[in-house]
Length: 210
Image (cartoon, rainbow, N blue to C red; front, side, top):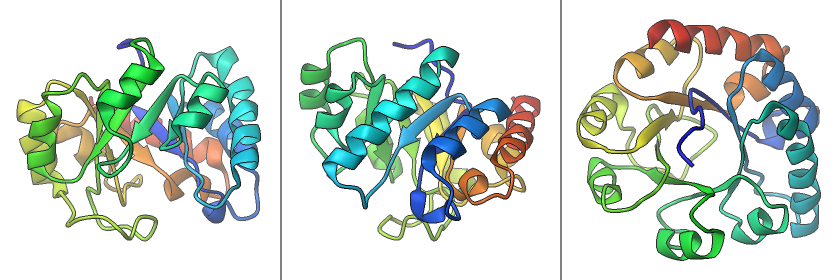
């Protein structure tokens, strides 16, 4: 499935949403121009995660915006989500692909240039470059790749690339001009007073930079 638009990729995080629900944030962000959504909630039970995934699917379906499930292959299957995002220590890509089938989107986080090279041997649908800048939302990651890391990876990867980590309206343009196909954000949308407006501002920056 290669016809998806990765340019403005929202990753959910209830802890940063200032008391608002993930479904509210997602619905508003979509109105602002978000093109993909990843459900990433570390503190929900499996049942809660499943119910929330179903709810987000119903919000996104009419807009034809893919819902990607972080890490939870079982939930991705249970709700027939559009795809799965895995990290380096999650279920292996080959297993995920075998179970999900060829039509689902599978994204893989890469944290080093070496991992990005290794990903060229896999038929993943996109790679997440993580983190680009240091960030408080992901504390368990490697040294930031920086803009030079994005440029290097963009020079050899055969995959679509989305950058994540410390991205906001002040540095989004530099990410795209460095060669990334899209930006993934958490707090730059979910923590903002007006998620729709925040998404629209980012969308316009990305489109101008392409």
